[in-house]
Length: 367
Image (cartoon, rainbow, N blue to C red; front, side, top):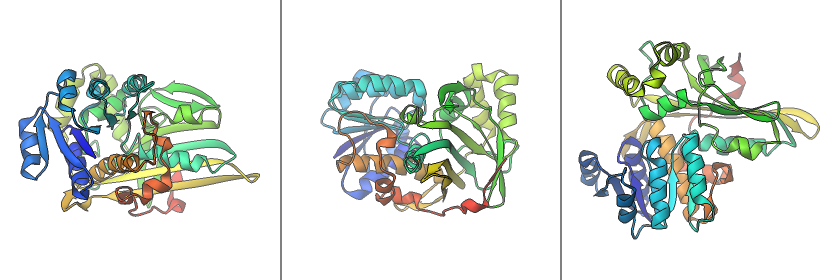
C-alpha cells in the first residue's frame, strides 16, 4: 500500500517510521519544511516537498498513491481532505476540530474512497474503547471519558509540558464541547465541569475540552442518559489556563498565546498518557459499572525513543490504517472511530502499543 504522510513534524515523523518499518507500506512524507524532510530522508524515508496549504499541489503530488495520512495542524485538515478527494485516494487524519470533521464528512458523501478523520488518541482510541463498553449494556446511564497527556515530572506552575501540537491544545481549550445530558445532545463550555479524582495515589483534575468525543454523541444518541469527555491535568492547571484565555483575553489572540507557551513551557519526552473510561448502566436487570483504563509511558519503539503521546497518537493512526488495509473497516464513505472493534484494535501490531500498564480501577476515586 502506497501511503503519503502529510506533515513531517513529531507525529508525522513517527507514523512514517512505524509504517515503513513493517515492510507492508511504501511511505512518502510530504511537507513544505525542507529541514524536516531532510531529517526524515537521512533516516531512509522517501520525501517530497509539497506546500500543504496549496490543495492543487497536494492533489498533484498524490498521483499514484493509495491513501493520505494527514498529520498537519487541524486548520489544514479540510484543505488536505479536499485534495485527497480530488486525487481519488483514501483519507485519514488526527484532527480534533469539530467543524473540520463536519466538512470532511460532507466530502465523504457518496465518495468511492474512505474518509476517516479523528484517528488519534482523543478523538480516536478513546471513542473505540467507550463504544465497546457501552455495547455491553442493555441501557446506558452514564459514560465518562477522561484522557490526559501529562509530564511524568511536572515542575512549572502549569504542571504541564508541551507534548503535542500547541495549535491543537489551544483549540480544544477554546471551542464548545459536545455532550449528552438527560438524554439530550447539547454544547457545553470548555474549561468548565471541573472535577478532581485520584489514581494510584496521584491527584488529578479534569475539565471540558473540545473534540475528544468525535462522533460518539451522534452514535450513542437515544441510548445514553449522560456522556461527556474531559481532559486530565494536574491540579491547578485549569485555573491558570482560564486566567490566560479569559481574564487576559488571549482566547481571541491565539498567536500571542502560542508565543507565550512556546517561549515559557518546555517540551518533554518524559511523559505519561492516562486513559480512563467508565460506563454505568443496566445489564441482566442489575445496575453495573465497567471500567477501562490504560497508562502508557515513554519507551523505545522501532529503535527510536518515543514519548507516550507519540506512541498513542501515531500508534492509533497506524492501527486503524492497518485494519483498513486488511479490509476490517468500510472501504468507502465516512468512517467513524466507533466502527473499529476494540478487540481488533488491541490485537493489531500497532494497537498492542496500548497494552502497557493497566491501572487498578479500584484505586480510582472521583469527586
